[in-house]
Image (tube, rainbow, N blue to C red; front, side):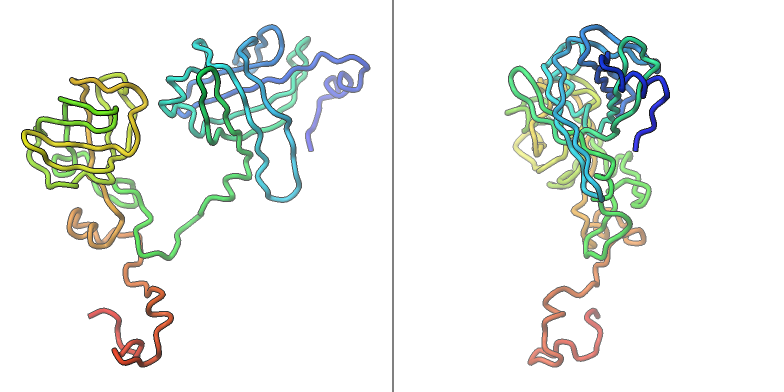
Length: 299
């Protein structure tokens, strides 16, 4: 239930109202944008809500229980506000959104209607559509640990403990050739040679070029005559040119074997590699091959 001020409640009950919708969008990098469907800019709370941006939302619907309430936001690709470049670069992923109902004649009379985060964003030639996910969306995410064979930490994070920013696990490169903004050729790594697929499942972060500061996941890493190829899962957000530079970090497939052989970090392995699988669960108590005879599954 929303609590309205006395003045706002009286205004809403009046036969004629001067109400508008305002949306505040705050990206992970701290950049804040404000939009309104009013025909003039509005300002409150230190944010200016810009009019005439082609920014509209679908009907807001709420439901009881813990189901996730979503709505869609449609907008034009306005160079002064939300740009295609920012959308392609993922700068709006998981951005925080606040939706306000405001008396545009007196912006002190306002109420926060909905809060959430931006989910899937789809783009067209002239516009975009963003899904706004309600706060209940967080309840759909896995909390805590799960019993699984693979590690549930991300390589290099606090739970993993591996320092990727060392010459053993990090390479720096300069693009000498590029195909489809996704397949990168590098003459060599100054840090020295790395085994093929050393950076597979790793992260590449651009340090120069139009993609500076953005990161991408590495699909494959292999040697060719006179160089090395880094293949990304997806095309870079912006065009890649020869001379662009990057850092690339060793990847992990989250298995016990990789943790042991590549990182020597089994003390911090966050999976359960000895967890019996379905083959053990459905085997006979004592079969021809001695399955489930009460002994250890591992030597």
